[in-house]
Length: 517
Image (cartoon, rainbow, N blue to C red; front, side, top):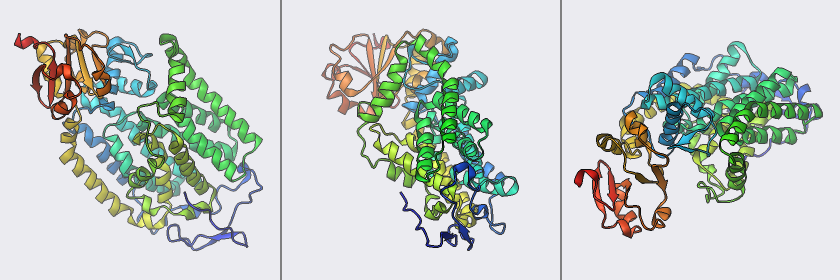
């Protein structure tokens, strides 16, 4: 993404750039040295905010983070479709069935996501009840962990502890907390939000293990990648692995010792994640083949998955807009030290990898955003501007979610159906919904949920619905009323069906509704 710094004839480089500006001259690391032999940083002081700079207090950063990421829990905003409602229903079903190995959606094994986020959400529902806030709490806590681990990673890469390290971590963590994409995705948190802390930890421990050779750091990196694998499959390993490996190759610092450490990290990660995957495959035969072959390999090389078909440049505007307001402070002068090279290469290599994949989604780029936060935090200009910009940004975000959040959530939720089905005391024999608008099921009374049978609620695309001939007489189609006429043009069997308005939704059936017979 950024051009390499020009190599000066004297093998020195100035750090007088206004983004880093110490006005000193430093020697570049000897490329012939192995990574473990290089000095921690050519000039660590260039990464530390100046004592005269208005460095954000850690307490201010935590206060802003808590305000941004805990306020949504207080709003009267229902779970949204498709992902937020679906994941909450799966976690709810875990508790009601007492099955914490196989995630299920309306009785059928849910094969598209691993287990860790569901475990966290189920624990929250068990502790705090089947409420909206309890369903959202784990995602918000993972978002806060993402902020904390971004600050920790910045300290590790700067090789600083004590007050200096705290200053570095506060700036980087504060940048990530107020960055647009992490904040927006946290409003309906999903698995990718939980992936960020583990990729941050894995990269930080890998960096320390590579420089010190510490066995403990290698083990911890493996544990972090194992938890990442339980969160989002191989995405975490790919994001961390491609960045760190590309860095070692680009800087010619790959050694046999680092290869051995890398093997150890992978082995530990496999040992952490494998027991659940094996148990899941035993309970749902064929799961491993489906998840790793269909979802990962075929999702990467073909457009067969539901997130396929996006342009190669899909992530570029997301990265730029999602990195606001801090991406404007990123400087290529960060390439002047080893950890800066790692951050730039991690960012660039991950962007290339994700862009090459045929399956693309907004959330996939989230684990790379800490790189932008840390790179931006190295600018002394940003440190001077951080407090007013962060406070203004936080005020804008909070105002937006207070004013528009509940209405937007209701507009993307099917909760209007809940009261009707609760009043009826049961669901029709088959409820067909479009585009996974199923969040209403989370709010059904326990006795209504207890009477549900397997696959009683099913989601279809319009093309799939149009192929159902004849339409089952005991089925009801639920779809947003404002989309009804356009959708029904493709469903002639229901064009003259019986209709019932339920809030924003329209129920359509071939037979009269029970309360109308």
